[in-house]
Amino acid sequence: KVNFGSTSMGFMAVISTTPEVINGKRYDGRVALSAQNSCAEAGQTMVVPDEISTIYGDKTFDLTSIQPNVMKAEQTTDYTLTLGANVESIGFSAFEGQTHLTGLNLNANLQSIGASAFKDCGIKSVMFNYGIRSIDGKAFYGNKIPSIFIPASIEQFGSDCLAQNTKLKYFSLNSLHLWKTVADFTGVPKTCKFYVPTGVVAAYKAKQGWSGYDIEAGACDFTYKNAGILNT
Image 1: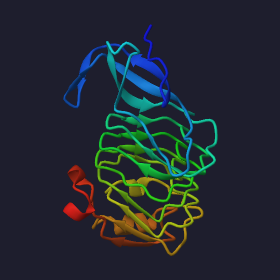
Image 2 (image 1 turned 90 degrees about the vertical axis):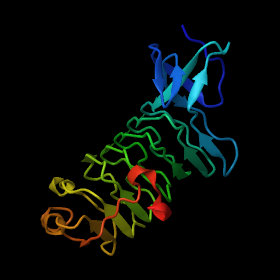
Image 3 (image 1 turned 30 degrees about the vertical axis):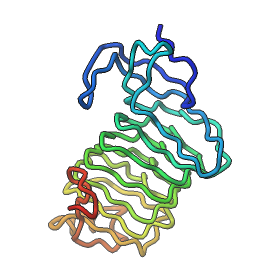
Image 4 (image 1 turned 90 degrees about the horizontal axis):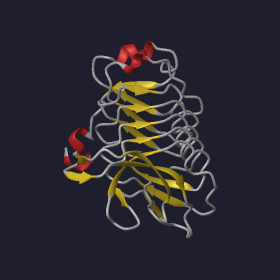
């Protein structure tokens, strides 16, 4: 039995008690965020910690995942979610329907985002770091994101993960192979500019779901090695 005592974050579930070194630090195992408390004040940032210690402080666990349906109660004021450095995955429907979730700060170690994880939220901006591998169906369905940059590390891209983003104006997808995916951009304005790598423009234009958009060569992987847009 592992006792974490009370935490403002919510409830944790132990997923491993095998000691390991992660990001240069030794941990006594891994935990997942299994239930999330709501924010108390408008404009507050909800921070998922890098780690969590037991009530007596004798063990420290790495927080590496967020489980499905983690946030059940709707927040009544706008807030931002910031991931801890060690979170690698976000489960399906984790924050679905959180219309007051307007800001999202992802981390450099995040690899997967489950289906409907942020469906029907109010997110206005998101930046994916190099290393993200999968974004499942409806992951960001129905948000307010104006621009999206997907790095070359992406391997799986849910066909409708960006559908109903009615404010999307700029979409850069740095993938040579995702044109093979039948896309569903329902609700995304036809004026949205799509940018893909040189050499595969024709392939994207010919594929169902992509063909109705203005697609040009020019995808840039601003997040390669997490350089940042201004430091490439």
